[in-house]
Amino acid sequence: MNERITVLFPITDLAMDGAQRQLLELVKGLDKKRFKPVVLTLHPGGPLEREFKQVPDVEVISLERKGKYDLLCLFKVLGILRKMKIDIVQPFLTPATLFGLLPALLRRTPVKIVTERSGPGKRNDHLGYRIYLKAEDFLTRFADWAVPNSHAGQEYLVQRGIKPSRIRVIYNGINLSRLTADDEGVEQVRRRLDLPPHGRVVGMMARLFPVKGHAIFLQAAALINQVMPDTRFALVGDGPLRSHLEDMTQELGLASKAVFFGEQRDVGTYLSAFDIAALTSETEGCSNSLLEAMALGKPVVATDVGGNRELVRHGETGFLVPRGDAEPLAQAIIALLQDPDTAEAMGQRAKERVVTQFSLERMVHQYQSLYEETLRQREGLTVG
Image (tube, rainbow, N blue to C red; front, side, top):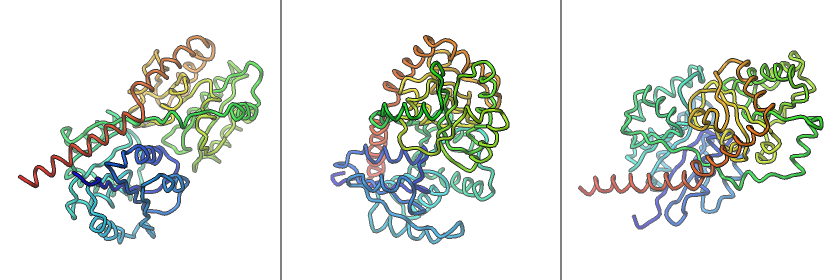
């Protein structure tokens, strides 16, 4: 392996979501003397496209898929594999996994690695999505590795028929430099919340999609408001449920207590404005927002699902609560609000855990080792 290893990363789009952000950090971190990353999107544009294109020595290509029935992209990928002499294909998300893995198997690309970003539980029930997922599960059995970002993801893969011997867990890595907070920006966030002198902020950073459980967060906020009316609630993220959730704040009497900040790039500033971070997902792999809040020394309260229980040590770095139930969520948050010393100690332990166990450097090193190790094995088999 004297020449650089060319790694193709098919991905559905470059939206500002967790998987896309992790891919961005991965291609930034890869040693460009050893690896040549190529990012292949099904659809052009996206909030993160500019950031990907600004990464030195990373090529970004779009298949410009015309619609859900446009299968010509499969032939385009075959052409790219042939022309660019791709060594490794590692797709992210559905249906990019199908569009990357099938051509790679047909072309006999040396190494095929599938990623899994979720865990067991409720997910997209759309018929088209389920068909793609079934096809991807079948093709994954012929890949070299399936890499989930949590042991919950590993369990989910095994449930879908993937052999445990072909699964290797690599947790998300957090780029601490991305979390630098702007002090004036933090104050602006807290002013927009109309925070009283001794008020506290409970926040949640997540896309406004059903799987994230924002309705439970707001129901818990209403219960907290009855006990500690000076508390304010920040929701950072956007999505199709925004209008519904804004109506819900009115119905719950939270119109003056909860603020929707929309999608924000300045993650560090908004998370720094929180006193407590919450996550009410119905299912989760390895949550970036949870790790980022912990990295900033915030105590967290999260639902006891999927990868959350691998990140949060209950009673040490935060609390885990049953999903779908606002009352225990509210009780856990109130306990932290009423005991600032315990909350601060939990936040510090959470920070130490992220720095030592979930660093970006560790994630990149694990992927690089996997690439080189698997490629050597494949080349040995070819020679033999």
